[in-house]
Amino acid sequence: MLDKLQKYWQKIVMKLKALKGTPYAIAAGPACGVVISLTPFVGLHTLLAVVIAWLIRANVLAAALGTIVGNPWTFPFIWLTTLYTGRLLLGINHTPVDFEAFFDNAGKALLNFDFDLFFQDIWPILWPMMVGCIPFCIIAWGVTYVFMKRLIEKWHGKHNFKEQ
Image (cartoon, rainbow, N blue to C red; front, side, top):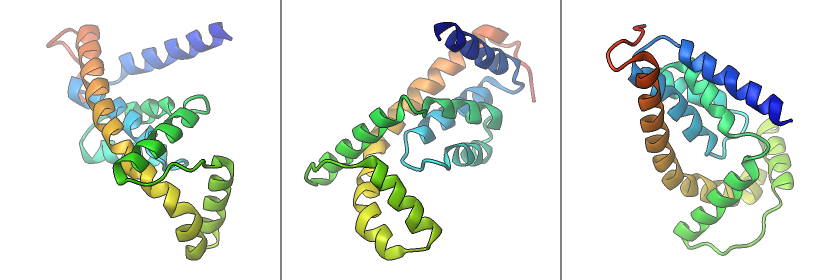
C-alpha cells in the first residue's frame, strides 16, 4: 500500500511540475484547494476551489489537485476539529455529533428543499463548522502558498518559470 501512495504522490508532483504559469498562479492553486478542503461543504470542494482559483487568477488544475487534502482519512479529523473549534469560538456546548446522520439528513434536506430539517438538524452543526474552519483556513492558506511558491521557484529557477 505504501508503494501505491508513493506512486500516487509522484504523479501529483509530476503534474504540478508540468503546470504552466507564474509561481503565484501555481502556488495559489493548491492553497485554494487545501483551504476549501477544510470547509464543511463536502461534495462541492473541487467546484469551489476551481471557482475561487479562477477568481484570484490562480491555476485551476492546481486548485483541483489541492483538494486531495480532504479525503476519507482526513475528513473525520477536519470535521471534529472545525466543529469543536467553532463551538468554542461561538460559546456553544460540546455535545457529540453523529456525522453519518448529519450528512444523511443534509442530503435529504437539500434534495427535498426541506428547510425545516435543514435549520433543525443541519444548521446547528454546519454553522460552528463554518466558523471553526476560518482560523485553520487562514493558516493553511499561508503555509501552503509559501511552501508551494518556494518549491515551484526551486523547480523552475527563480526567474526561469513557464509563463501562461
